[in-house]
Amino acid sequence: MNPLAQQLNETITAHSPIVAQLLSELGKQIYFPKVGILSQSAEAKQKAKLYNATIGIATENGTPMHLEVIQETLSAYDPKDIYEYAPPAGKPELRTVWKDKMLTENPSLVGKTLSLPIVTNALTHGLSIVADLFADRGDAVIIPDKNWENYELTFGIRRGAEIVNYPLYNENNRFNAIGLRDALLAQKERGKAIVVLNFPNNPTGYTPDAEEGRDIVAALQAAAEAGIKIAVVTDDAYFGLFFENSLQESLFGQLCDLHENILPIKVDGATKEEYVWGFRVGFITYGGLPEASLAALEQKTIGIIRATISSGPHPSQTFVLRALKSPEFHDQKAQKFEIMKSRANKVKQLLDSGKYGADWSYYPFNSGYFMCLKLSTVDAEDVRQRLLTEYEVGTIALGTTDLRVAFSCIEEQHLEDLFDRIHKAVLDVKSGKV
Image 1 (cartoon, rainbow, N blue to C red):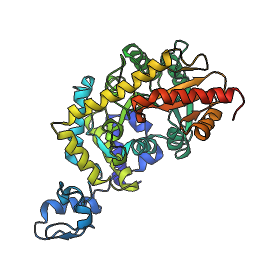
Image 2: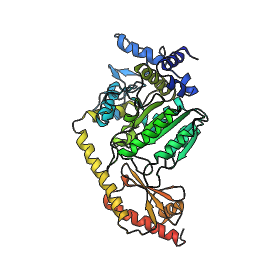
Image 3: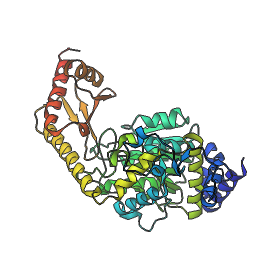
Image 4: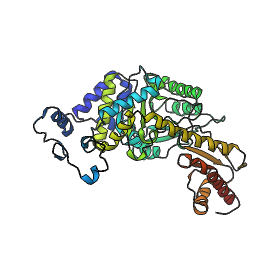
């Protein structure tokens, strides 16, 4: 094992022995080189005032070399803020500004020990880092039965972990905290689990309320008290899009310092929150640990980044930073929130109108981009195919009964026509037209 990796492991073991036991074999082996090209280049950037012949970029007239056909579309930006490599951990100012944003939007984090957010290539990359650092073959990854399919690829296929499902909703159509607790307690022999909490949920658009949040925390605490070591990941991809009386904060805040057997990890980003999907700017943040452990985990995380993508794209980090610092940012974001909320409310109004009879019900939703129909009499894939071929409508079939509809990308005035067409497709399939 590399001495730097060994040193990081010893630091984590000394200050947070449970976290040391949560690390995967790759997590134990990984480190960020202190004497490599990047570290030497960083040192040269500070001290080489005459000539800096370290890093692989080209310069001209004291600025990064660039083509005018590209720069002419980016003239608002200094070339040094878009063409140079970003640091592996991301632009330092962006990391600080994002942490300030997190603290403002999640008051329960105030006073907790947190790492500085590390920039990822959006949320999938952040989840991939978690999988690399903490998931080994055969480890249990606990997610609800209604989930984003990429979890299977990220944790199951890539890392060989076992996906353990529990029903998202209980018999009262509320979050199934008992199911989560039982799935966790079933891992007692393994002694370790990874839990992914995704609110607002993809595909259902559901976020628990405050009482349900307390039940989730209690379930995690019960498992921790039973001796199970848990890495809890809050996948906050759609954070802030809370349209009703649900939790308004990430559960990450309540999990920090909850129990020594729990490692809270927050994965979030500008991708959906700031409507910049193609920018691929996300963040990973660790909480509830001593500063020495947080610093060691940061080094391991940067090591994973260095070993995979080297660093994230610099231009999009600059664009996001500029937006976050703009005095118009909050007003513009509030305007988009109201549009999204109005669409969600319109969908609920249509579904509650009785117009569509008993051909479907819907799973509770109160946030995010999506909702899910539960078809009563026909197969979801048959309906999806009928919608495409006969009505020119795209939806997502999940299993035999569930049809996911993204209201986020449909103008409000078109929502009724959308659901009318879905209903016609259901009736078609019901009558044998496929």
